[in-house]
Image (tube, rainbow, N blue to C red; front, side, top):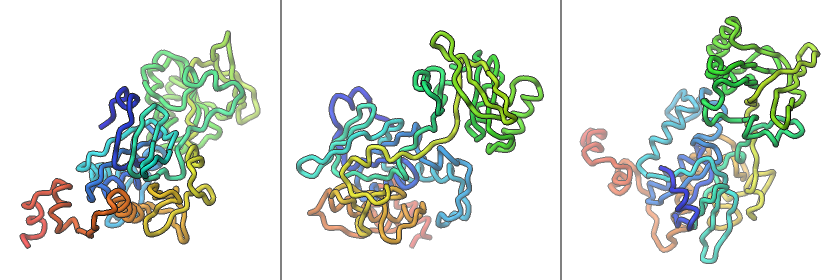
Length: 361
C-alpha cells in the first residue's frame, strides 16, 4: 500500500519502525519484525522495491540463498515480497530520507524528500551502499535540460512517441527502450561507446533487425557536447570511435549509463562511520545512536561479509533488539514459526494447515 501524500505532509505519522532501504535485507526485516508483532514503514529512493537486485541485475542468478540452489535476483525480491505480505508494511517509494533526528523520549523524526514525515520508535537503515543515483551526462549546462529533454528514466513511454530520440548506453535499459520506442519514435539513434552490448542477446538481436530494416541507426562513439537551438535541445555532438565529429539531431535524449551509490544524508545523521559504513555491534546491530540499527552492506563490524545471507541474519537479531528497545519491560521469548500459535496467527497460517504440513503430529 502507499500513503496519502497530502495527509503525510500535514502531520507526521507515528509508527513503530521505519526501514530505510527496500532491497532484499530491508524486505526481510519487515518479515522478522512482523513475526514479533512490530509494524514497519519502508522508504526507498527507487520507484520500486528490490534495490540493486531489481534496478541493476534482475536476471542475475544467485547461488548462495539457503534452500534455493539457484534463484534469479528479481525472483528473490518477489519471494521476499510474498513472504512479507502478511505484515502489511507501508511502502514509500521514489523518495529519499532527507532528515533523521532524535527526539526527547527516545523517538525519531524522519522526513523524506517528498514531505512524508514519521515519528518512529526505532529506525533500521538497510540502505545497501547508499541510495542509487543515475549516472548523469557529464556535460556543461546539461542540468538546464534534465527532466525536460534529457532523461535518465522513462516515466511515460508516450512522451517519446513521434519524437527524434537519441538513446545512450549499451545495457538492458538502453536496449529495452530502444526496441520499445523504435517504431513509435520519428527517428531513433542508439549511441554506445563500443560495438559489444551488455544487454540480453535476444534484445540485441531484435535491435539489429530494426537497424537492418532501416528503422533506426547505431553509432559507436561517445557524447562530446550538447547541441542547442534558441535555448532548446537540438541534439548531441558525438565523437565517433573512428575519430569523426558528428552532429546528431534529437529532441529527446535518454541516457542509460547505470546507477552509482551515494551515501547521501546518512553521513550527516551523527552516527559513527568507518570507511563510509555505519559501525554496529554484533549483538543488536545497533549503531552508535541507540534506537537506530543498520543491517546489510551499509554496516561494518569485525569479520563483516557483504553477503545477502549475512544481511538476513543481521535482520533477525536486529528485530529482537528493536522489540526490546520499543518494549523494554516486555519479557522476550524465542518462539518458532512451526509451533507458535501467536506467530502462525500473525502469518495467517491456520491450525489445519499446520497439522497437514506436519503430518498431523
